[in-house]
Image (cartoon, rainbow, N blue to C red; front, side):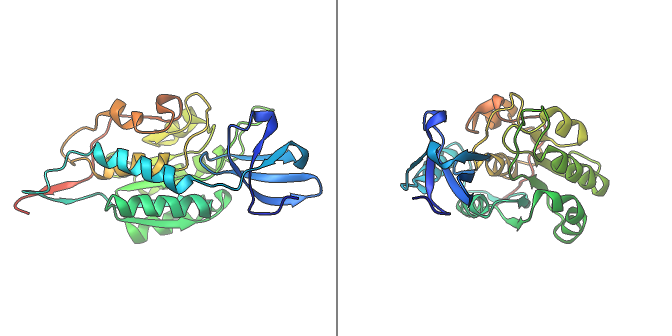
Length: 253
């Protein structure tokens, strides 16, 4: 009945989260959230087929809302947004993030790799691309035994990135995914992290934070609460520290 790539919901979750089936082993399906950065598994008897994926429409709504919140005087000034390196473990999410960055005219170098590989790769990536902003994300979960699926991998990657650049003003790090260990990520050196209330976060939340910083003037502090409110679940899903933007503003255009 079900096959890899199908979009489904779970009856036990009141069908409130849309998933993609990534693999099927007997009666158990492995699932990846379409809009939330969440891995799950389910007996196929708990699933309902829902092959109407409107994620692109929802992403367009998010893009339009984000774009309308920008206040850039394009008539007189020119802008050099901060450069982003975005490392993600999910090809579906990273394609959506690339489209978001392109729509915002933010230069972003994106890399697809497993969470367990990120720490070993991060130094060479930073040395080559020298970004202003680093996004470290993918999938995570707070498990029943109170351990985390991938927070440890994200923390190790943040620590490695901080060996490369200790200053949280010169390299702004955004780290974590659904239900990640927020406090430990902040202690490791992330400027922004998920998830203060161990909630899910939207697929585009890391890109939204990165773009907000990239498009904020370098000589001004960001409006922290305003930036966090742009994410799906606000301060329940993402928190961080006040920092300056990374965009140079020039005149005349």
